Every structure is written in C-alpha cells, then in structure tokens.
Amino acid sequence: MFASLKRVHHRFELFIAENPKLSILLLIVTLSAVQGIVNFFRGAPLLSNLSYIFSLIWFYSIGLLASNFTKKKTGQFLICFLLSFITLILQSIFEKSLVDHTSVFLLAILALFIGSLSWLLTATLSSKRTRQENV
Image (cartoon, rainbow, N blue to C red; front, side):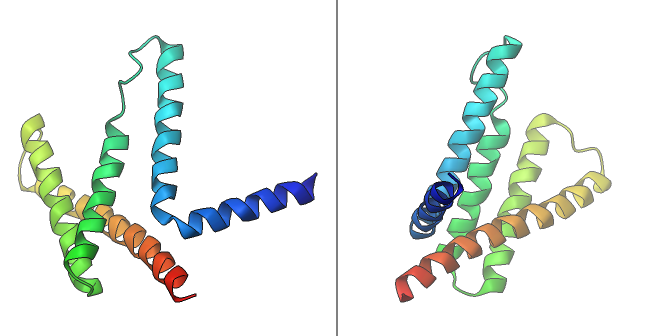
C-alpha cells in the first residue's frame, strides 16, 4: 500500500514540477473549497471571507509581473515591494485606517515581507520551469 502511495506521490510531484503554475491554481482551489465548507457550516454565504484568496492571487500576479519586466533579481524584488506597498496603501486609504506616519511605516514593513514572499514564490516557480526546459 505504501509503495503505491509513494508512486502516486512521485507522479504528482513530477506533474507539478512540469506545470508550476498549476500548483498555485491547486492551492487556490483547495483554499476556496475549504473556505466554502467552513462558510456552509457557519451558515454564512458560500463566497464570503475569500479576501485572503484574492490577495494570494494578486500578490502572485505581482511576482509574475515583476519577472516579466526584468530578469535582474534586485529589480524583480523592487517591483514586488513597490506594487505590494502601493496595494496596501490604497487598501488602507479605502478602509480609512491610515492614522499617522506609524501606519505607513508598518505598511512598508508588511509590504517588504509580502514583496519578498511574492518574489520568492515567483523565483522558485520560474527556476523550476527553466530547470525543466534545460533537461
């Protein structure tokens, strides 16, 4: 039984390595399904509380956009940081949650973290893609 599970797991890993963007799609579908089930049991509308999934899609898209603009790693990171910072600032303005310069400073730190995660995710997936093309 364990041998067949290992074989299935190995095939799944190879399939994901060949199609790296599919892993993000699989993650989004899984998170959406889990959130839908949680909403169903809570009695909430099925499509509520999906904002973190849309944020995941947006920040992954920022990383893809940065990788399409430039091949330099520092440029990609800078684009990811700036777009994340602009997104967070606009979101805070619309929510009227900007209080003073401390809020902007905290958003900059959060954008640095999110931008680095976005950049790392895209760099990892693009390196898998180039590794597959070279083989």
